[in-house]
Image 1 (tube, helix red, strand yellow):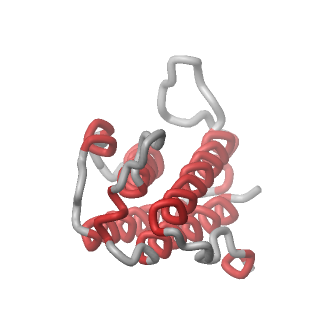
Image 2 (cartoon, rainbow, N blue to C red):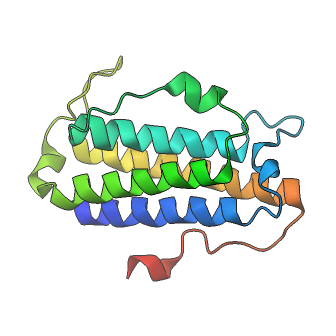
Length: 162
C-alpha cells in the first residue's frame, strides 16, 4: 500500500458521495430520517468531510482546520450546493496533503493521541478509508430506501483506480 493508493481510493469515494447526493430527485430527501435510521445522507456526508478535513488536513497537513463534530451530526437541511462544496473542499485537501506526503510517513506514528494508544500513520489512513466506505454504503442504502431508486451510481468503481 502506498500513499498514492490511499489518495486514489479516498478521492474516488469522495466523488461517489457527490454522485449519491446528486442522484436524489429532491435534495430535501438527503436529510430524511426514516424510522430506525439514525443518520441522514446529509449528516453522513458532513461527517465524512469533517473527518477527512481533520485527520488528513489538520493533523497530517497542518491546515489548521477546526473540526466541529457536533455540527457534523447536528446541522440539518443545508443546501445541496453547500454539501457539494464541502466535499469538493475536502477532496482538494486530501489531494494536496496526500499528493505531497512522503511514503516513509506511513511507517511513522500518526501524530494524534487516541484513548487506546498510538498507531502507525499507514494503518490509520487505511482505517479512514474503510470507515469512509462503511458510511458511503449507508448513504447509498439511504438514497435507495428514501427515493425508491434501485440503480447505483457506480460506487467504488474500478475504473477510477486504474
